[in-house]
Every structure is written in structure tokens, then in C-alpha cells.
Length: 302
Image 1 (cartoon, rainbow, N blue to C red):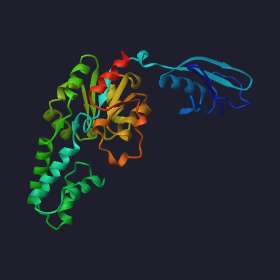
Image 2: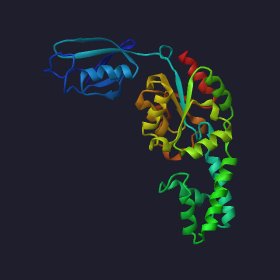
Image 3: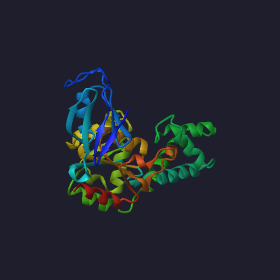
Image 4: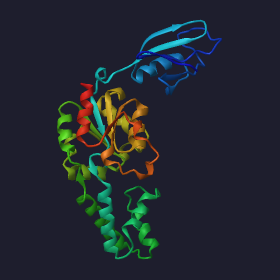
């Protein structure tokens, strides 16, 4: 399937021989090419055109010949794209969470009087229960043969108190939010449950910066499922192409945003997703090595 560049325009795809030109051609399964990179695949020509526009490609001409249907597109520049809203992840994007959880686990081990922080953290990482579920602590105590209801409750209290007390806001985040708030509607979409999310935002002094806060229990879904992001966009009154998503997870934040057609900013400064080592940060539209980079990136959009 050949493609050809015409400056900043690109001829895209070739219609299978034997098809006549109609406004909508069923059973046509073209792939969209910009350069030599496949962006998306569709099944009807009308969907091809409409989704190409949705992906921020300006379809400015469609013509036909005996053997091919050609779409000519021009990739929209940042300055031509209007941004109305910015969606942030919470943990390790606005606040340092991993270090807070490590300190909380250390405090639990100190209370139990045996074991290691690393061993307890592995219980939280198993995926058997939620990442913040107290059931992970219960399993740990039972496996070590020291479980009692009294000790379990004490460990849970210690864990939550130390985790919240150890939370800290990344340097520069408050200034970034202060400046963005003057121009954009802001939201948080987090995989944390509502109680945890609100406690962290209030402890960090960040809650009032946000017009919308979406936690996992509000939709019953977690990223990379698009449902919580779409829910936030609806509350913000913004279309995906009018919004930016900022997050530390290439899988849960960046890929999810890309699939919706949002501008994506990878907050590399907070990435603690060791399980995503095979993912390339080039997936993101932009990379923020520090929070202040987010302002610089958004300046590109006017």
C-alpha cells in the first residue's frame, strides 16, 4: 500500500480495484498514513473522513480516479488547535505517592516488629487486592502468623496516617496550577478511591484548583479504560481534541489519552511505573521533565 508525501500534504491509501466511487463505500478498510506511520484503521469511507478530522487532520480534498480514492490531509499545527481543559493524574504527577507509601509500609513493619518494608510492598503490588487495600496488610500478617484483629486495625491506622503525613507536592506544581487555572478548566482523574483522593488533595492544598475531580469509584472504571476520562471531559464541557492529559503512566494516562485524540504530556519527573519499562516515552506528544515544562508546552497552543 503506497503513500507519497507532497510537502506537508500526504496522499493516503489506495482504494481496492473494482470499487466505484460513492459518498460512502462499504467494506473499505483503509489505513491512514502520515509519512510511513499508520495512525488508525476504519471500515467505511465516511468514517475514514470523519475520524481523520477527529484525529486533528484537516481533510481538504477528496478525489477519485479509475483505480483509487485519495484523501489529502494536512496535519493541524499546535497553534491552530484550541485547548480548553487540562486533565491531571494525581499520584506521582501532582504529588509524590510512592515514597509516601514506602514510609507507610516502614511504619507498619515497625509496629509489627518483624518482616521488611520490601516484603510488605510486594503484597500491595500483587494485584490481588487494590493497590491501597488494607487486605494486603491482613494477608501479610496472616502469612507471617501474627494476625489479630487488634494488630490489624492498629497497622491500618498507622499505614493511613503515615502515608498521608509523608505526602509531598512536587516543586513547581502549585505555580503551574495557579497559572493554568486562569486560562483553562482543570480536572483530576485518578485511580484512587474518592476518600483517598480527596484526603490527598486536601492535605496537599490542591483541591481548590480543580473544577472536576473523578475517582475510580465514581465510574467503576480505572485508566486506561477511557470511561473516567470521558466522564471528566463531559463535566468540563470539553471535547477530547480540546483537552490535554498530563500523567506519569505511559499505559494508563498517555496511551488512554492518545486513543481519545487528546494532547498528551508525559510527566517523566514523577514516573515510578517500573512495570512499564518496555513502554517508550515517545508515545507521548510532549514530555515534561519538571512541572514547569507543562506551562512551556501549553504556550505552543496560544
